Amino acid sequence: MGNEGNKGITAKKNENFSDWYTEVVQKAELADYAPIKGFMIIRPTAYAIWERIQEWFNNDLKNLGVKNAYFPLLIPDSFFKKEAEHAEGFAPELAYVRGTEEGELLALRPTSETIIYDSFSKWIRSWRDLPLKINQWCNVIRWEVKQTKPFLRTREFLWQEGHCAFINEEEAKKNQEEIIICYKKMVEDLLAIPVIIGEKSEMERFPGAKSTKAIESIMPDGKALQCGTSHVLDQGFAKVFNLNFKGEDEKDHLAWTTSWGFSTRLIGALIMVHGDDKGLVIPPKVANNKAVIVPIFDSKNKEKIILKAKDLAKKLTKYNPLLDERDSYSPGWKFSEWEMKGIPLRIEIGPKDIEKKQVVIVRRDNGKKEFVPETNVTERVEELLIEMQKDLFIKAEKLLNSKIDKAETLVDLKKKIKEGKMVKAYFKNDKKVEAHIKEELDGATSRFIEKLSKKGKCVHTGELVDTIGYFAKGY
Image 1 (cartoon, rainbow, N blue to C red):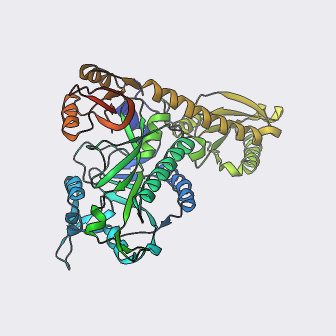
Image 2 (cartoon, rainbow, N blue to C red):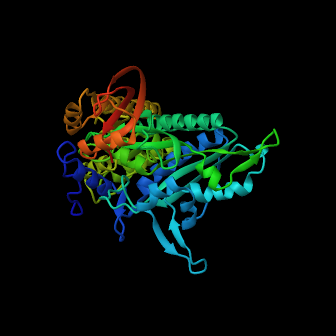
Image 3 (tube, rainbow, N blue to C red):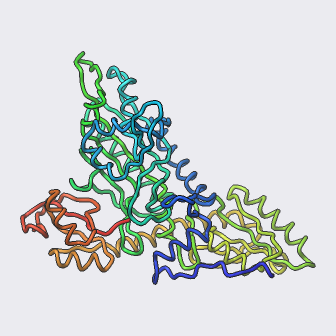
């Protein structure tokens, strides 16, 4: 077995989380570093996960009456200057090229509100044209100056961005709410990652938005990860891009708009939440290949066992199983490789199994091994995949709940954040107040806020307030 080598994960998840994550990304063949700093190459395994996410959410879009479209990558710089708050919010992240014909600087899209609403202004004439609901799957460029990390923070990433226009604010709020609920259901049901829905504070909400809702989760290292956002935009965009329509009352009105999105950072969340010291663990619902069949043979029985393995693969076609019939690697080496790549189930079949008319099935998440009769393989595979999906979510939910704490003073808040917690604390929802708290917390921010009927003392000003902030360091 001369081709074998040490390909396994060497860093421990609980000891060096950052190095462990980087190893899993590369050794499980999810992504590679591009020749340009801050960019990544998404490899087929990760892209297949992204395609499954797209498939799931496209079904939601269809049910909500949202249609997919595509808008240009290049956006005139003048478009950003039309909406001051939006322009200020994205100015540090904009990357430009100069158009040879136009002479104007052209920004590589960091998000597409401006260019999409320019088109909306041409398409919307009366109340009969509303609602207008558009989504695009695309890449965006945000020139991050912080340390980059594949899937979590890169200068280019893939995402979906939805942009809708409505007759009134009530319809816009309804859209914001139904989207954030779809996001939560998708991340929890498909990726087995529990999330919390919350409203962003005045300081943290999207530039140009009147209201931002987000889904947040907590990673094993105690940092929060924003998994998706949904915004009701202030009418600033509608004003500067002339999103006017003639109402049923024959008067001119400004449209209300929403925007919402999630990105390939969801793949980073999946890696961090479910992975272990052996490598990646892919939840069954999002796995492209839900099983790998490993025939165990020698030169005398190879043909017979591989034939049996191929028959088994045909029976399990709906699960898109891999068949590893390579003879240059030992069974143990293959087991480790497929564990590292996160395939949900491993099915072993050797000479003794053929004699006993059985197979061996091993779950990736807990390593539990079962001897399953040939006649019951399909049914048991289905049951095990369902069980694994459920167990992964339960395990992740316990982790999330264990990471949430509360504090009544700024000192206690700082202490618990250093311990790797997301900490609830009363605070005044004011940009200046939050800026002071942020300085004290060494970069931790409010991930979202919650209004309560019972008031408490702000950890910074001591005032009685009805707002609680969920504070944590984040990716």
